Length: 211
Image (cartoon, rainbow, N blue to C red):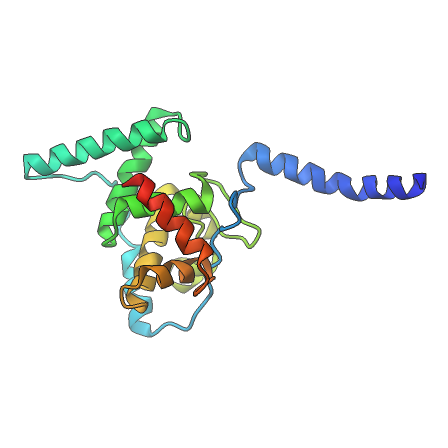
């Protein structure tokens, strides 16, 4: 029995070590078991081109408003969301930059920022360097194959905040269009679990909390 226990301990050491390092660096994520697993699909050339164009132009996400009322609503949203995210993202400057980028990229893709915040909550719990067991990366858990399909093949860029959010928002927008506006099915497709209720329900619940 002693030999058996020693064997189990020996095999367990690398696993424990890897988990310790992963949690310490914030890399191991998928906290709710829902981390993204988008499937590589055959895309029409027009769709591929549209997605490629959608991820170009990485200008800083600084919105400008001509209407003072729109500016006031944006400022109120930013202040409210910043206060609610303070525990998850304690650095104020980083938190503001994150929220500005979420708002900019969500609106750019025709999505509600609160929906994107809910999806990020479920996908990565707001961890910039999250990596799922299937290899999805960053805040929105984008699968690396997308950099080959619509990007420049540089997978490291998926850990860049704006790049990750832009990919994620563009991909979700594409899935919504593919599903003719059916958000439930689009969310399932984003997660690689189309037709199963667990993931869409989790995101919709989180979305409701961020409204």
